Length: 169
Image (cartoon, rainbow, N blue to C red):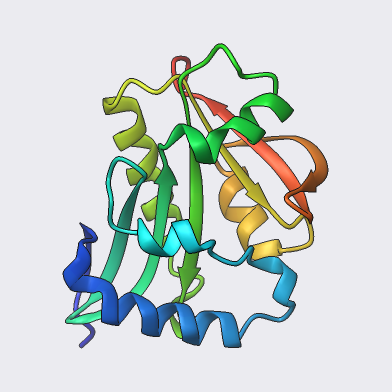
C-alpha cells in the first residue's frame, strides 16, 4: 500500500531532494518552454521565506512534487504592472513540478490550495500565476482557482497571466 502524501514547507535540508526533482521533471518536459528556468537569485534564495514560500509533497520519504509563491517585491513588479495591480499586495504562484508517475492525483491542486490559504493568512490581496497557454496540465490546475487575464510575453516566454482576488474568494 502507498504511503499517504504529506505536505510540508521546504527548508534547506530538502535541497538534495528538490535538486533531483527539478532535474527529473525538467528532463521529462514535452516542451522546454513550459518551464521558465530558475534565475541565479531564485536558486540562491529558494529557501528564503522573505523571497518565496515553498511546499513539498512527500510520499514516504520521497519528494514527489513542489510549488511555491513568490513574495519578494523584486519578483512581482512586472506581473503587477502587466495586470494593473500596482496598488495591491500581491504574491505569485511559482515553480510547480510533479514527478510524472504522480500526476493526475490532485497533488498539484492541493499544493495550490494550501499556498492560496498561506497567502490569505499573510494578508495578500491578489495571487497571480503565469503558465504557458499550451501547457494543459498547468492551465487545468491553475484554472480551478485563478482566472486567465491575458496572454503576453513575460520575460521572453509566452505566458497566460492569471490572477485570483483573495479578498473575495
